[in-house]
Picture 1 (spheres, rainbow, N blue to C red):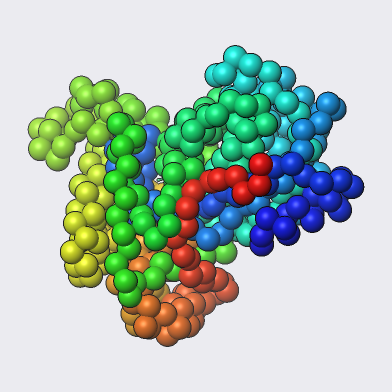
Picture 2 (picture 1 turned 90 degrees about the horizontal axis):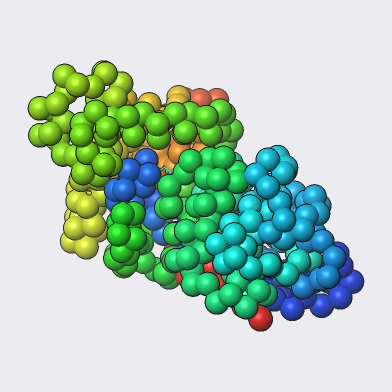
Amino acid sequence: MSADGIAQVFREKFGYEPEIVGVAPGRVNLIGEHTDYNDGFVFPAAIDRGLWIAAAITNKETKSYSVQLGDGQPFVAGKVEPGFTDNWVKYPAGMSWAISKSADQELPNLKVAIDSTIPIGSGVSSSAALEMAFGVVWSHAGRLALDNRELARLGQVCENQFVGVNSGIMDQMASAMGRKDHAMILDTRSKEIDYVAMPPGLSIVLCDTKKERELANSAYNERRTQCEMAAQLLGVKKLRDADQGMLEARKYKLTEVAYRRARHVISENARCLGFRSALANRDLELIGILMRESHQSLRYDFEVSCDELDAMAASAWAAPGCVGARMMGGGFGGACIAVVQTEKLDAFIESTLNLYKLASGLNGEAMTCRIVDGARLLVA
Ligand code: GLA
């Protein structure tokens, strides 16, 4: 896809030229799962599966058209309330609500065409990309000059308060702040980012289980509540502030479930920091250990895996060229992420998908990802 391609979609749909064209990428996360809403560390990267957007200001309502999802309900920018719709257009509507509330300013209405190469439901944040794409366009169209960090914050406000998912800030930050060929370790408390170059000779492969994510939002919100309760019982502001010693010393205060949830977050934060050195030192063995431990911790302590994700991770571990693999994202379906030796890429993919098919009966799908820059305007 290209700037010309999405401009053409706009022309065909609305019959005239767009004024603004932009793109926002999806993301992977190397390690650091379910840590972002605990003020912890995450290690995402923006990928070359993106959402393209072309827009023009209109004096009528905001009308959005997606090649994949069709026409969205029209709405007046900034004049929508949470609960407005269940349709995909809740993300653009929510962004207009979050931006205009924060800027205390009316936003122009837009005609918008969208085309995307980000798979939906695979856990690579197509919704955060949608939010960031509308964010860069609205910031420009409304002459607000919001930077990408601020757009990421507003994207989280949109998710939490408009869409009703209590997500952390990882997905929006990755889509907004990604840097070509670098993964980013993000301290979700200070919002500080450290960009780490991906070592040569390693590839990132997403291994999609093709299992739809079921009841994922309610389970996600439940995990977040459990983490907050665990932090309270441990006497800390967030689980970021707890460590293994404190957890063991105050174990008697926690339910068994709260203890395991906290143990995941505490150990995952440590793994995320360990991963930074492992990557910098090209320590392939340690990368593999940390990713496997992350998967097991998400499976047994945090309980957000499922049979298909377990089967995919095990298939990847057994395949040639696998450096490390684990379930990725919120869980309950979606994809595993694998770090693979580039020279063995083809053999890795073939073997992983064959083993997965034997174990699950499902046809999984593999996608090799390149790391790209975050959301930006291409024509304005
Ligand atoms: C989803 C959320 C993120 C993060 C991950 C789990 O992708 O949107 O904020 O919590 O799950 O790490």
